[in-house]
Image 1 (spheres, rainbow, N blue to C red):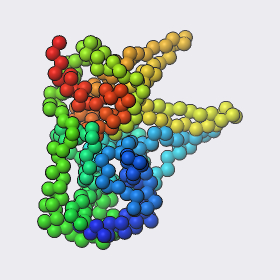
Image 2: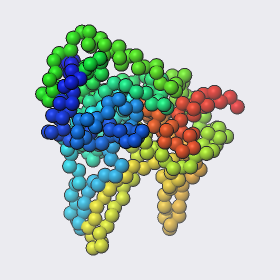
Image 3: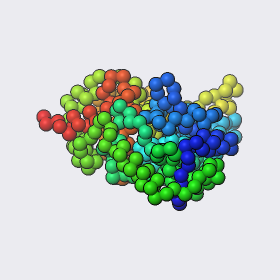
Image 4: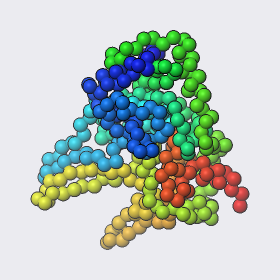
Amino acid sequence: MGVYYLDERQFTAFVTAVIQTKRVVGPVARRARFAYEDLESADDLRLDFDVTILPPKSVFFPPAQAIARFDGDEVSSCICPVDTVLFGVHFYDVKAIDQLDFLFRENNADWDYLCQREATTIVGSNIQAVSSRAFWDSVGTEVQPLGHDAFLTKVGSGYVFETRTAKGEALLEYGDFREATQDEIAEAERVNAAVMGTCPERLAYTTEEIAEKVRDSFGNEKMWDELAERCFSCGSCNTVCPTCYCFDVVDSWNLDQKSGSRTRYWDACLTREFAAVTGAGGSKENFREHHSSRFRHRFMRKTTYLNDKLGGPACVGCGRCSQACTADIADPVRVITKIMEWTS
């Protein structure tokens, strides 16, 4: 694919032309925060965002997704993919989408996710503002983002637009692009390199060192009790995480007791009921009854359990969990550093 340049004065016209033909989702300002929303005007697009409240996975995997309707023995799908362009995805969120793509495609492919994912063109963008809890430049650095179709980098008075797939190349028809010069390409590389090392938080250990130490700490009940002491089990850290993918499925029945609908909702392993089951004769069991065991499970998943499958940690350093945690105990940098330095 190629590398192109778009003058800043032409950018609004480019996004407007795309909005007129496709569904376009991008980061918009919501008071002092940012959120991915459907765009009605190019003027609402804010590529200078630091981090969004919820990750862009919600475009393919919404918090509540109607997946089927049923009436007696008849079942019909609710999945109806829409041709969509997702603008303004930072590289760490592209890495998270790469993980979900793999997990939802392995074994029995989840087409409730994949249908909209395959109908979406992802345009990444360079980081122009750094979140106060971010640490994306020191976690999983061995993993590169792959799932975007094009990448925008703000340089001087324009944008360098690198296309990576045919879907990204197809967007060229909507704007007054020209081929980028070597100086413009070099400037884009300099801009993207310069932002690395600017995160306010930092992990001082490699992926392998963290995975080994966290796994070895599994039986340290005293440490996990201390780390999770102020956890409310609210699940906020799960809800905002770009790599969490657990869900629950709920059937809603109509009054005729033969028709209804099936919806899946994001689930959260920090909540008390997540691992609760009902057995024969009405017996009940909860495999992770105490909040410290649920807290431990989350960090095992993020730093250890999935590493071989994903090629790196299931954490991309966005810092959303740190911002969302009411008790301010979910910060992965703080928790992992305490584990690494634990000596007793």
